[in-house]
Image (cartoon, rainbow, N blue to C red; front, side, top):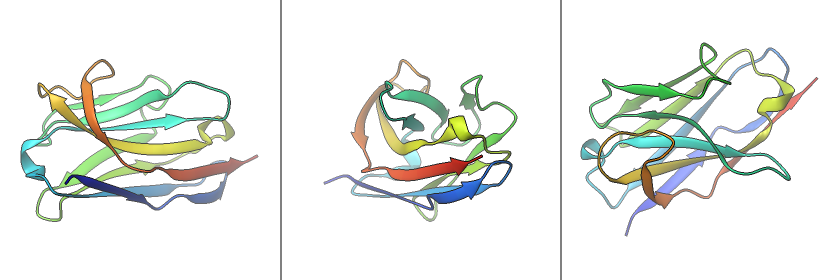
Length: 124
């Protein structure tokens, strides 16, 4: 059974940084591309970014490009989301997800497994 656990969320002031982690189990992690999404209150879930199974291809939403960085450690079955220069509009629940059809971790990929999410709150 696939299990994804996000951690690292919290409360931070605008301009600050956080690093989210997503630990995966129940799958051969190194063969799957991964994505990060977020959902703010009253809004639809949106794609934040993705990383290919080998880490060589990265995708980011325009809203986070230049501020957020995705990486992965296949030896630890973990994908990371480093968030810098945080803004109040980054406040949301952040989710990691596994690409289960194809390999391109873009916004229109099929994500078959999801974590439970971690709350990120950015105060102004």
